[in-house]
Amino acid sequence: MAVIDLETTGFDADGRDRVVEVAVILVNREGMIEATFETLVDPLRDPGPSHIHGISAQHLRHAPEFGDIAGYLVDLFQGRVVVSHNLAFDGRFIEAEFRRIGVRIPSFAGLCTMRYARRLVDPPNLRLATVCKECGIAYTRHHTALGDAVAVAQLTGVLWRACPDVRVMREAMTNATARHVKWPSIPTRASPVPRREARPPVRPVLAELLDALPAAPGLNPGRSAEYLELLSRVLEDRQVTDEEIDALQGAALEFGLDRGTLSHLHRRYLVGLARAAWADGRLTRPERDDLVQVATILAVPVAELEPLLKKRAGSDSESLALEPMTLVEDLRGKTVCFTGQSMLTYRGQPLSRDLAESLAAAAGLVVKSSVSRKLDLLVCADPESASTKLRRARELGVRVMAEIEFWRRIGLPIE
Image (cartoon, rainbow, N blue to C red):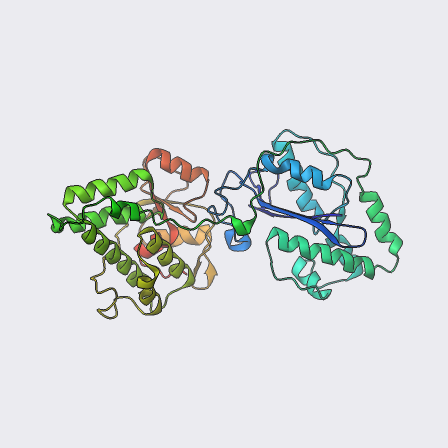
């Protein structure tokens, strides 16, 4: 058997949705696992519901495209019974992905554990987690392609043993076997990128900026506020380009800011960010992750960040001994557009696109559905996404802001 599972950007295989992760487990006739294969797949768009499958655009930065790893899949499928939990769904996506690269594949026959679970186990519902629970299978890595494939492989063995007439399952296997079906030969053009290897650490990119500045006292410390404003604008999408580093360095030199002053200002910005995060009296996980990311970019040591994560920033004068920068901004009247599927929540409910647009409108912004030169702000669920809106915004020079920063700027308690 070749047990397969996919994670996708959505449900529309023949439309704009794509595969973002695939796993295949090869199982022999005795039910033993012979080999495993897994890789993330660049969908050439945003990754879709990251809050479900846990895959962000950052994970996909070095992932191969489907055509680059299609050769692995045909080799794995050759001469095997393809098994899946909801074979119709996975089959549609596999066929659609091969069709996009101009390859015609054999009829996608196989064994669907969802179908046989209905007949043999009669669970309350046919979700993989429910069926596994009914069958006593430990299933912990939900919505990861490899974790799901392992569960399906175990479930197949349970269903085989549970079948009152073994001939039924054996017939299903025989009908699904592609022994005489020849899969096309496709070259592989890239190595697989498993999820566990995909997320590179955030680089302390502004450490280079500090190293490039003189250590002597600054000549014009009064220009600090202008530098902080520029820094705030650079960091609001949580991405720092080489051009932005050059702009910050040029501003620092023009303003007469030395290395020590700049390091001080970076910490001041971080304290302001922490104070905004603690404004409602608690620090949520997304806010904590955001502070760690920004601290890394700013080259602020983790040891200095810890006090801000453990207690309310700004509630005493000891938080890095700095006056925090105010990060609230009046965005009323600005036009805004949203892109990507949010992983945040508002008052306990997922932050859907409709809810986000309603909250933005209530805060006085004008919501737009598309990106144009006249747009003031594009809010991204994932600033590293390959979404069409984000690419267009960057081409047009439209201001881009990470969603957690946007909600912080307008003062809403988003988690």
